[in-house]
Length: 277
Image 1 (tube, helix red, strand yellow):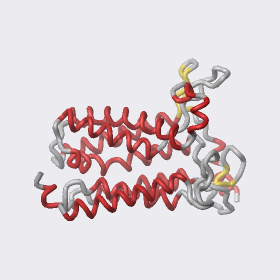
Image 2 (cartoon, rainbow, N blue to C red):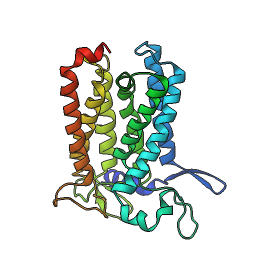
Image 3 (cartoon, rainbow, N blue to C red):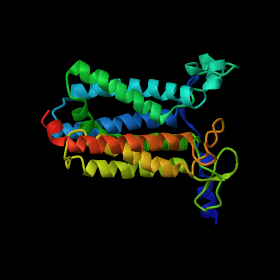
Image 4 (cartoon, rainbow, N blue to C red):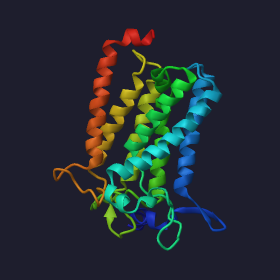
């Protein structure tokens, strides 16, 4: 019983701040993001060493810089536009201002995965135009490593005590800041959208039947896992449930799976032409 109680109260023993340098606080969340990009970079360097693509270290380093910028801008503005537009309409400075009304540093809270994904895609299009390479070739090279980074991102959410799940009576629930026993949905996502999806894509990275196959496979896999895990995750309070059942993220997940399935079958039928392009 003591072991179960210790497990369930684990979040209350985690300080979101890893360490401080003067007045500046370094959070586990920021370190998790740093770990995510580092792991993705190392996996892509591994692929270069194994001659699994004809990209250079310099090109991948430049791409990740584009991707980071696209992710941060897309994730932030995706949240502003779709998740809490009225708040930011009345307080536009909050979009980029990391301090509260009292001048305390709070960081910039509110990032959207689907907004971040859109930002990365747009950044990738800019990158391939500048470097005169093929978007689908780049996607096939980069995509298998992405879920490994996502695993660390969700761990960051857990360590930050945010984006927890719905109230539960299950023994594997955990007590978060509101004192209620909840699903640790961040860990569910880290496992399925991170580790499981990474394993699927990494194992199949050399089994492509056509160029561009891995991006829709990733998008469908992410949408599939996210759709079901959302049933255990606490809905955004300002949005609630659509049709009394689905969250906004589930609607986006359905859209993602639909786009992915359409792209997969369309490109599959024209696979020979794409592979030879």
